[in-house]
Length: 115
Length: 111
Image 1 (cartoon, rainbow over the protein chains, first blue to last red):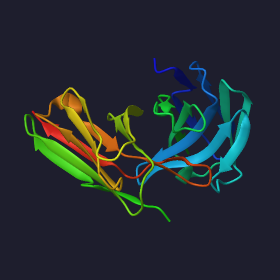
Image 2 (cartoon, rainbow over the protein chains, first blue to last red):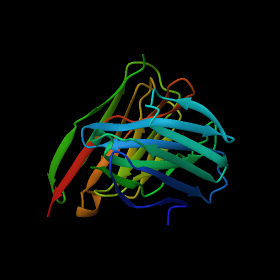
Image 3 (tube, chains in turn brown, cyan):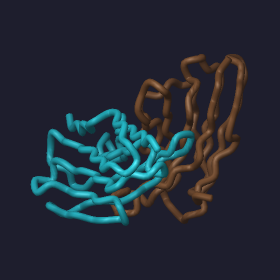
């Protein structure tokens, strides 16, 4: 148990489906992040929430919609995805600003396959 | 913009051999972190280096931060099969100073 829990672990969805990824952290951190990791690209930072406000959105397509209802929970809502969106989606948390020496704590990820 | 390059991208070693991966930045870094991701796993924080010339050890792992704070290295002594994985040296960047990851170094260990 890493202190950051992601569900589901695996998800297969059609291009017309709507689904949501969930992340919960039990570490008392005040920042949460979504990263995308695919076979061909390094870890890509998608969204950053600090104190429940979105502070960074790295040109992510609108078919990905994040939500942070409180400092412990983070969602990624998915709709009309493309096959190239198939990847491992990782949630992480930290103290913000994140240079306090303790690093980011990652969840185990959701392996998403779009068919 | 700031770039941190990590070499080598892949390294295959025989169990018991030493291994080193290097990270080189085009600009001075305020600090650098190291993470390990096992196959099928997620990145796990190993350490943060902050001071110029800093050296830290964790059992068989030795981390160094260069005097100019523009490079860093991770050295593993006498590799074991449990060392298999990808090692990353992300840096703080972007508009809000968040962790930016590169491709890392993928280590395989032959028993």
